[in-house]
Amino acid sequence: MILAPSEESAMTLWDCRASSCAMRLDHSAELDRSLGTATSAKLLPSHALICHESGDLVAWDLRRRRIHFQKKLMRAPVLGLDVAADGSRLFVAAVEPKAKVFDLNLNNLNGGGREVCDAGGGGRRRRKPKAYCLPRGEAVSATCEAVEHDKEGVGGLVLRPDARIFATAGWDYRIRLFSAKPPHFKPLAVLRYHDASVNAVDFSPQRPGGPNLLAAASKDTKISLWRDLFPTTAAS
Image 1 (tube, rainbow, N blue to C red):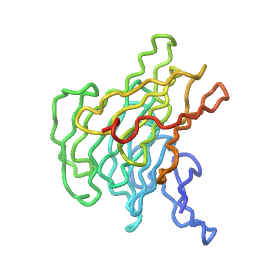
Image 2 (tube, rainbow, N blue to C red; image 1 turned 90 degrees about the horizontal axis):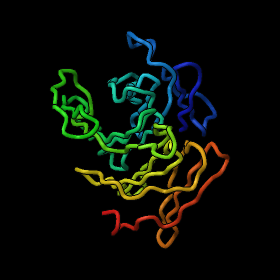
Image 3 (cartoon, rainbow, N blue to C red; image 1 turned 30 degrees about the horizontal axis):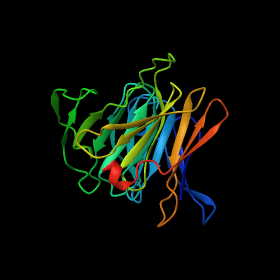
Image 4 (cartoon, one colour; image 1 turned 120 degrees about the vertical axis):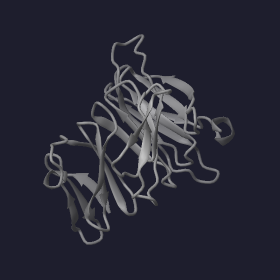
């Protein structure tokens, strides 16, 4: 299955084996307001998570073929979205100088929850009466300080396959690495190479005895490749 944008705010789930459309995901028919264009998405075995220009996340239940919940995650368009392999955490980054990590419980979709509101940590907790599958949200500091370049924002985010590190693509020309271990998600490194905004990052699949690679693509038309960053012992 492939999840790809179609027109406006909709996305289409394609069945590659049948070479046909399996499902069209269009929130406009079910929600009372427009969320703008879909900006990032993650396909899971039973759900599709789609973020929009408005900073909202829409979770589709693919088995029931309907929206399960919709939740405001960021104030700006979400350009980076990833989920831990075990489905326990949701990582998001937006057109603002920060990223957020949310606890995710896809096995308990009917439970209510709490959210930490302050993106810098230490925010006031608020009860949410509406049910959703993000029981708790913890703000993570992924700040692009933009000391050298006045460009704040995160253009992409990816979680390493071992779920120990995540990387952000900064509009301040920087790549940042963070520990994916709660509760602090501490900063690990800032990688400097590019001469323009970094718009995409991705880790290679991990194979026994194989290299651990991080690739980054920038507006400067260059692709950087970083090898063996923070082995498992260092990231933990």
